[in-house]
Length: 196
Image 1 (cartoon, rainbow, N blue to C red):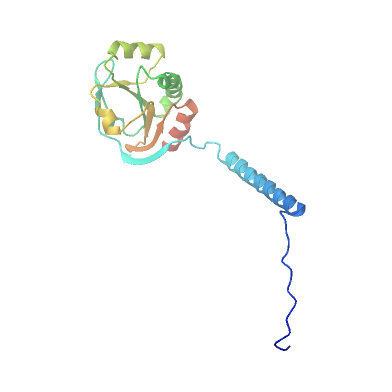
Image 2 (cartoon, rainbow, N blue to C red):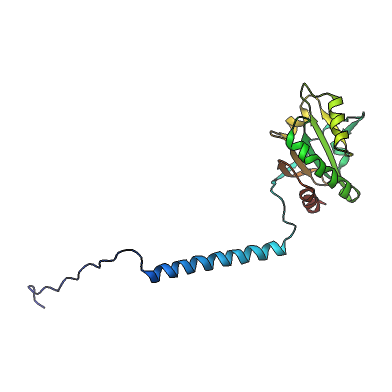
């Protein structure tokens, strides 16, 4: 070739949009991906039927706390070592607490003989009296221990904010799970099974 010879220029391709073939291939690939994800999810769910409910995982010692019980005496949290303990913070004015209490009572009745202890910590408000707490306990048939956080010490030590909130303590006295919001009986059973 000499210097004056020029090669013919190619015309730039004039492509407009996606071809029908590319569109069908993309849609088929996306559908196949969704099917694979669904199969994996279904397979994992079948292999792990006792998946944990939505909880925060912690690993800190439970506070050594002694609180007055509703019907006299006191309860020291450290005395419950060796058992799985659910510490539930609630109030008589709290609507979600009213929804949750029957589930907690059912879990307590079902799992108490296996080593579950539920401690209901009543957060005091100025309008809540011991009589209001007793009325609540009677209305919902609560048989697990109820303690009174008269001066807010338990709320401060556990660092609670909204209620209801529940802390699951393992037999060694370590807070392992926290659940903000209501629990079901099945939630309690699943978490108890993980800790015993």
